[in-house]
Image (cartoon, rainbow, N blue to C red):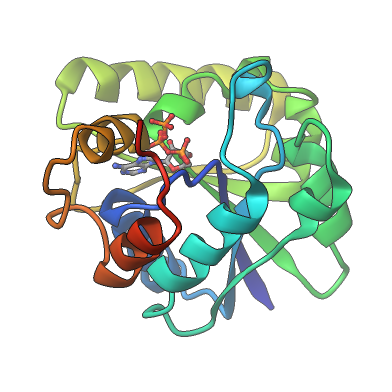
Length: 200
Ligand code: ATP
């Protein structure tokens, strides 16, 4: 069984996330795809993060259109700082091949995550483009070579249609009362409105 994993803060989940996930599922012919909202992402320790309950609910709405995709609360249940190697360890099984999706920004930092050796041993890494930028493409190629020579494993680049948007940008726009319909699913926007999230 080929299982895809896509972790993140998802505050809120946007069309950049959904398009990358959908492309990932098709390109790698995945049987299942798990969206994993982090409890406390290591790179966001000490910052204020929306409660996991809201982020998980928004993920259910945002990714509902991808068949075979479900939201896993594995990291929210574990609590504390969410380390990917622990999640992969929990999800790995003899009959499963794991594929881990991440955007180019996260991929470029993978060498400094906790236990990159375990991450590369347990999963095929799939890096998606977030911006159309040749310099970043070259950095990704160098990072791939360096990680493979240090840890071995398998690293692929996803040929996804790039959607240049971030959750930070959207939180700011929502806070300022601006239109975000271009980047957010209608159900996610309605949820944000109903729960009065991100308003300052
Ligand atoms: P923030 O602005 O709050 O840091 P973000 O938009 O980067 O949020 P995250 O939830 O932190 O979103 O990202 C989860 C994963 O999705 C990461 O691997 C990130 O690289 C990837 N990702 C985020 N935005 C995009 C995008 N537009 N296209 C492809 N991948 C993306």
